[in-house]
Each structure stands twice: as C-alpha cells, then as structure tokens.
Image 1 (cartoon, rainbow, N blue to C red):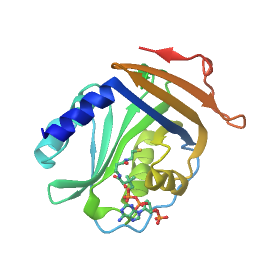
Image 2: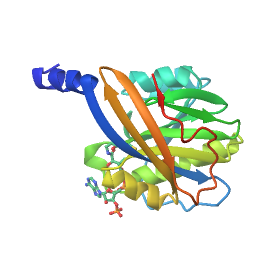
Image 3: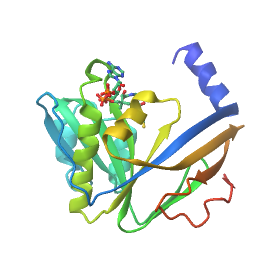
Length: 203
Ligand SMILES: CC(C)(COP(=O)(O)OP(=O)(O)OC[C@H]1O[C@@H](n2cnc3c(N)ncnc32)[C@H](O)[C@@H]1OP(=O)(O)O)[C@@H](O)C(=O)NCCC(=O)NCCS
C-alpha cells in the first residue's frame, strides 16, 4: 500500500462525513432491457459459487464472502473478467450500514457494490445489471429493493434515475475514531416503511 493511501485510510478512520441518498424500487413493474454491448452474464449464489469461482478470475474477496453468507452477485463478463457487477443482500436480515440499522423483510433486498470498470463506463452496463439483478431477485420472491448512493456520485444518481428508482430519504453519516453515527431522514411522500427512521444510531 502506498503511503498516501495509508494516510487517507487512517484519516477516514478518524474523521469522515458522508451523505447518501437512499433509493428504492418495487419489482412489480416490467423494466426495459437496455442496449449494451454483447456480454456474458453470470449469476453467483452460494450454490453456484464453486463454478463461478472457476469461471470468473477476478471476483473480489469481499463479494465472495458475501455470497457465502447468502448474498447474490451478478456480473457481466468479457472472457473471464468482470466489466460490471452488482450484489444483493436478501431479507430477512438486520445489519448496520454506516451505523444505521437496516432491516430487510422477507420480500426485500439491498442492492450494493455496483461498479463498472473505468474503460466500460458510459455504455449502460450498470443499469442493465441492476435490471438483471432485479429479475433474479423477483424470481426468488423479492418485491422491493433498496440502494444507497453517495450524494456526490452523479453517475450513480443517473443510474438510479435510469433504473426507475425513487428517492426514499437521506442518510447522514459521521465517523469519528472508527465509530459510525448515522441518521436517516425520510422524504414525506415515500411508501417505504422504516419504524425507527428518526432515531439516531451508532456503533
Ligand atoms: C456509477 C457507475 C456504476 C455507472 O456505471 P456505468 O456502467 O458507466 O453506467 P451508465 O453507462 O448508465 O452511465 C451512467 C452515467 O454516467 C455518466 N457517464 C457517462 N460516460 C461516462 C464515463 N465514461 N465515465 C464516467 N461516467 C460516465 C453519464 O452521466 C451516464 O448517464 P447518461 O447515460 O445519462 O449519459 C460507474 O461510474 C462506477 O463504477 N463508478 C465507480 C463505483 C461507484 O461509484 N459505484 C456506485 C456505488 S452506488
């Protein structure tokens, strides 16, 4: 690790302020499939992981760990390398995300780790993968997905718009000496439920 990266990591452990938009989308609506370059789609879950590990050379370790815990990962491949990927955590589940307690019911999922490699950006891979991931989730009985996007991430916000996601609220996060504090402020007109939305949480 370079010295600059190390200093940045320490700094981010000490102090970090971020604001995220929370998006959501129901999976009832039929969505379009976009006009992407040809690619091979791989869907990885715990059952298929051994085959996928043989197939995809550079799947990140944290995603593999997530699959072992029950997550699903969708990858667009060129050869044996991913060019775009996204993961989904299926409910029922409760866990802390940036200090906020996120609860998923049986028919809900949290979609995260959306990334397109720099040379493939701007071709519509990310929204297409989100749609494909939604298809796979819908076939497993999921009816609603949530996604968290950094407020400054214009490309991601654009992806949310193209995917027909609605903004549910704003998650304000602070990290001080490794400890996260978060507060979720919901928009009034959302149909999304979150009983303890106003209560600040920390870990
Ligand atoms: C955000 C991200 C996943 C979008 O992926 P993508 O496959 O490029 O998505 P799209 O092709 O639909 O492009 C989305 C928007 O990015 C912008 N964009 C276009 N070309 C771009 C390029 N070459 N480089 C960066 N952004 C570009 C455009 O605003 C585009 O919207 P438009 O189609 O209305 O013009 C990708 O930029 C990325 O991996 N970023 C780093 C990781 C990250 O931020 N992940 C999101 C976490 S929520």
